[in-house]
Image (cartoon, rainbow, N blue to C red; front, side, top):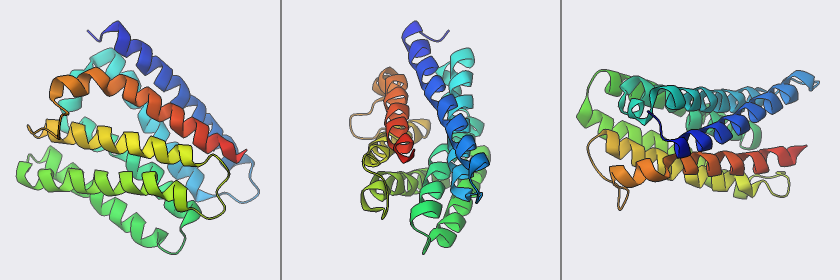
Length: 204
């Protein structure tokens, strides 16, 4: 059974994720020009919402599932594609191909049990997507004041994602032991969602 502390943080995270899903759908639906980046953002936070619900009902043990690892990769990939689409048009096409290849690589190596290749694919693609989310908001031209909060969310999602990836492969990243990651995971998800909410809603 999922501990009460984790349920509370997951419910709070789910509430923020649901709000962001609504926010980006409103932005997409009411804009005169249907901006694709809103759909990418929406995809990322919809997966976060569903993941949180699954963690509440099925427990944190499902994180070891290769299917969950694959689907959860859509969170950083979706958000990073949204940033590339909105603020970095010169290389958004290349990054979309990178994200597609990354998702397929994670899916094939995880579900196919190719552990040696998974040890490369998961940290590589999670790490790059996390870096885009972390650094992108600080250098994005035309971004609103306070958008740097998205970068803080990117830092948190990058650390958490890579730490979980190492654990799923039976390894440890720095001091992120399995017990420590499980202890901080749900508060980390909440802080991440809070940072994203602060950053993205600055756009008005």
